[in-house]
Amino acid sequence: MQKIRDMGFERKVVVVTGASSGIGEAICRQLLQQSARVVMAARNISKMQQIAADFEEAEVLIIEADVSKKSDCEKIIHETVGSFGGIDVLINNAGISMRAIFENLDLNVIEQLMAVNYWGTVYCTHYALPYLLKSKGSVVGVSSIAGFQGLPARTGYSSSKFAMHGFLNTLRVETMKQDLHVMIACPGFTASNIRNTALTADGKQQGDTPLEEGKLMTAEEVARRILSGIARRKRTLIMTMQGKMTVFLGKLFPAWVDKMVYNHMKKEKNSPLK
Image (cartoon, rainbow, N blue to C red; front, top):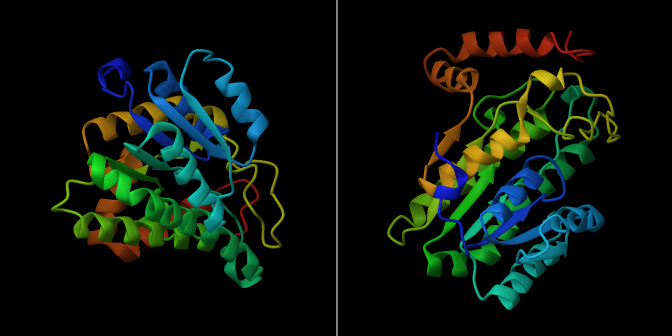
């Protein structure tokens, strides 16, 4: 197993969105352990300050930002370059989820998910791109199998992740002669607060998670795999066997996989599927 200290992030300038909790927090902590220069961007500035306080001598830039706002994304990049002179890695991690049948869904929920999950990635990448091309760096989208396979009761989430994949895959092709590294990272279900904050049909947070969090991937393991994938300049990172099988079989037997996914999601606690 490759250790983080061997991954070469020392002195690298790494921007992480959604840095205040879950996978984003774990990525930041592991980068700071490796003496990277870390830019933490999220809405919860007090939580980011608490994380940074554990690394007193580290080079950390904390930026309060909402990635659904174009001006905030521009601010993230502008302040990063002003402080560190460039960017080596952009990790588009900020994201929200939802759980509701489309028939009952307030369209504002999908708009909100697209604004954060898709447009946040587009905005940050757009402003960071000149610096990433100069450094021949990496742009990462933290996604999901929902970007390969439509998940029932997750229409907004799957839509935003499919859109993210389309954007990043196209960017990869456009810049293939410029040595930009583009990676799509797809964890399995991860123990974090993303399900607690997932939106319901009317846009309220669901509060209780429908999954057994203790049996899920840890944010620390996901972070380690993402950083390893960046170091190896991987194209796509699917982190579970179930995910790999879903993507592979979905290409060969799409109707059968649709049925399997439906039956699996129907078994969730308080599932909205009938």
